[in-house]
Amino acid sequence: MVDLIRVWEEKVRLVSMLEDKLGEREIEEAGRDSHAHRLPRPCGLTVHTGIGCNFGCLYCYIYDMGFPSTPRPYPLKGLQLAYALALNPAVAPGHHGTFMAFGSVTEPFMDETVERALEYLDAVAGILGNPIQLSTKAWINDELAARIRSIPDHLSILVTIVTTSLHEMLEPGAPDPEERFQSIRILSRRGVHTCLFLRPILPGLCEKEVEDILVRALDSGAAGVVLGSMRVTGGIIRRLEAVGYPYMREIFSRIPVDLKPGVQVTLRMSDLKGRFARLAVELGLRVYPSACAANVDAHGLGCVACKSGPCGDVNKLPDVEEHDLRELSAKYGLSLEKVMIDERGIFLAVKGPRARIAQFREFVKSVCKRRVIVR
Image (tube, rainbow, N blue to C red; front, side):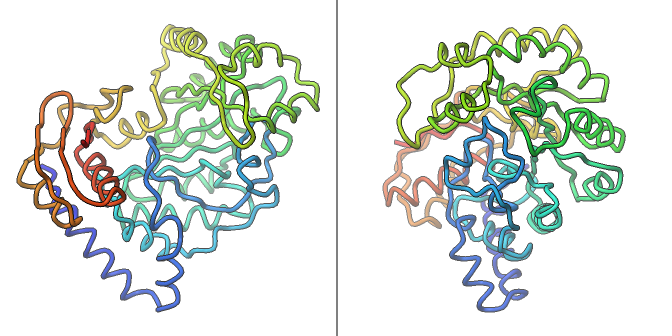
């Protein structure tokens, strides 16, 4: 049984323990860092192992977000990162806590950042104990795979392969897809839950290559596949046009709204995702509806927190007690006026500062693995 209050008390204990291990300046740095304040994304709280990425994938949105193409390790030490995460009011620690997502805005295993990434993985898994997912395009050799396998509670690894024919055009700095298939094979043989990450699906190109990629991922030992839509910006469109990408018409036909500066737009892709999912199942691959669904399965959990679910083993969903919700809301300085719990989720009427309500909601959702609707 998972107890909301015990998870909160463990959070308080971790903050105190880590403060004893860090110096005053280190505590101040970690407390100011975004990891101590950001709300989790739907896939979990994104953990930044570096700033910038030199893989230079033309379809990637991070360069439009202002990240540089010359990477450097993220400045926090491992203990500082663990402290920042424990300090974050929206983060619940532990095996049943907030999902941690590595690889969202940079490649964790670049030469410049691999040691920092491993340091962070050890800190999050070994100190906080949260479920971790990591997406990568890196070549993972036996030595690196052994270090990954040694991380407590293991990981859910997603290896990105979206093309084998145009990778030099679209992913000029990334390892060859052949090496990435090797990464799947090496990790899988060591018992690491490893999936193919077919994201972004590139309209026009992926239709021609998807079956070969799925078959080769399956042959390499992939536990499943996560399919993901393409997002575009004005910058992505310009970069693709500049190199003569041959399927621009297919991309333009799927843009649902006019592009605006700095805004990412998800293409209409439900038809392709459905088609590719059916093909994957026919080939014998498990299809996960999202990256966090693979994370749920890898860690033996169950989750019904979003419309993509149910994911994992729903028999492992924790019980939810009204008195725990009321006690926890008081710790956030909130007034919980009404509680309703049913098969659809947890419905709450809460009064208090909007930011604190959002943090409380994320903490409850992470631990209870259910939809939390606040009014």
